Image (cartoon, rainbow, N blue to C red; front, side, top):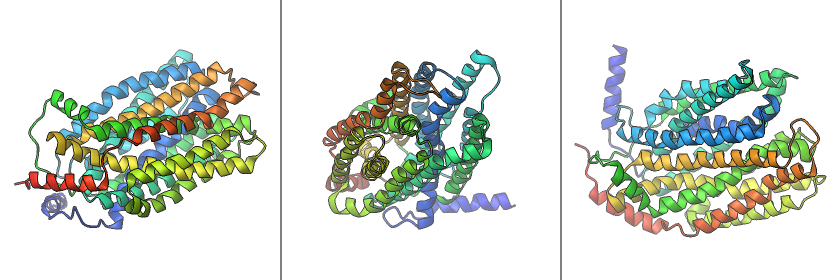
Length: 467
């Protein structure tokens, strides 16, 4: 009886008038952000520590891990479009994207725990285990991120509300990243003591459970309000053609790819920088707090700044200012710890708008595809960004691992000048160059706020309400 009543309520809920242009409630904003917070607690913890875990705890050579990252991305290249297509074909009483938040919660948590579990299968068996668990984690990452990002355009089509929604989401994301990365080392020590393997395993369990609970909360609080008439079935060829004609999307994902590679090179090697260059492993916590704390503060200003100057201008100006921090860190002495921490804060504050706004603008690219080609494929468009995000992680991880190996890095030893320079470059000059490339590419982004409003006006005339 209770189940029948709940089903009835859900059906009534789906027929209620949608408030797509009005303000969302704060509970829904936080609920939406919780879904991405869940993903990033795990994703960024993996980005920051999995390479270090494999090399310094599991004792796997950097070259082997570099190959692993490449192979897993091949699977992602297949998985992401399939997930996007699946989402486009999904229709439930809960919506298209929302139910995946519930369905992926347990598998994502389980695969996270398994990735940081060291088996006793022998050298070859352990490598096979690493491949299997990391591939599974990548698959569930695809389900999570594509679902969350597809929700942006389905919750509201108000451009300012999308910015607020994405900003709240990113504030929660950076809180999650801040807690996940900064608390990782203390938790590993707390749980494992001198046994780093067990410490990482238990820490990953804590993050896995936290991610699971946040996913369930997100599922319970968000609603898909933007209801669009079910489009005619489009073939794969036409869908791909619509993507290739989507100039804003091509520019946005190209911009984000450069940013993602640079960001993740730094993120995956920051622990090396503090451990080997500065000889202050304890500063990993403080450095992470300053970097992601600055990112959190930056997000508080984004809605006001974008409303005044527009998203494109905010991205270009803030990213350009962030270049100062990369140059500063490259030429700062390892003994000048306070200055190094200041550079980290500046970088975290001014590089954040590009990351935050790129994800919010992705929903605009979905609308642009529908306006330009009459093909609306939320899942496929979102999956392209998801793939680029993970491609950036893969390239960053592969490059970092190969560069460490090439420079003569030896785990748990005093490093040569060559390896120390490699670690410094991966925290300063290399991400700085990639940020500069992202700025240059983004200068060609064509969708201004004025053009977007005109585009949405045209779309609303085309769309017909569901019968």
